[in-house]
Image (cartoon, rainbow, N blue to C red; front, side, top):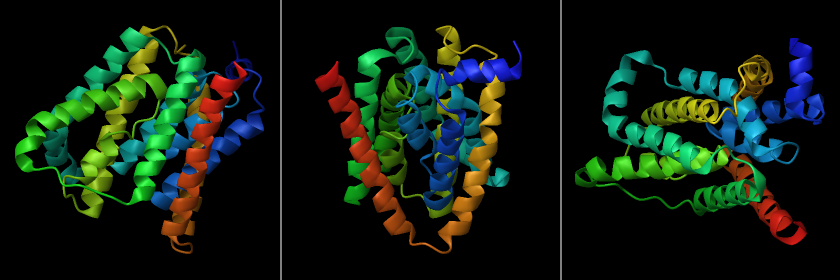
Length: 258
């Protein structure tokens, strides 16, 4: 099958220009606020195709952008060691969830995704934080990782509850960005493995997913440009409010019309 034929089959009837636009928008969001590429791309793509197809398209753009986020490499290894227990939990939870739940599909996947989006948006909009005591990190890290992995396997969203936990570690801004890059990279790799184990990630899809890296990177570059000219706080509030409304729409559509 040629790349063009694979592209058309992967789109599953969704207009290619809209799919490309989704990754461009998701890249812009990540460029402005530092995260959100998987969240916004999965949320919007799931309106046009099955969640498992949306997740499959996400793999390469998410992996490459998150690996890039781990820089600087000189400080990466100490952060990897610090977060290792949590990442073991993320990896185990994602594969375990994929084995138990199967590939994200059907009404339960849409409702789960909608609930995850609402939870993520409300928590982020609240502006509330908490501090994780050092003594609790040894057991809480793996637990948060397991829950994050389970949510990832069900929805394709990596942020809940990983991001709130990482923010509670008292990391500096650059350390937090690096820590999120590490966690999101592990989530992406584990999710790809979970899809492959479920025979839900045909190798041919990798080519189309790689193509989606181009609009994602272009969006990130534009987002970084806009970051210096817009108020990141206002942008983030509008983005998160729209995300919460999108989550409500997903849940209502499944409960009221199916």
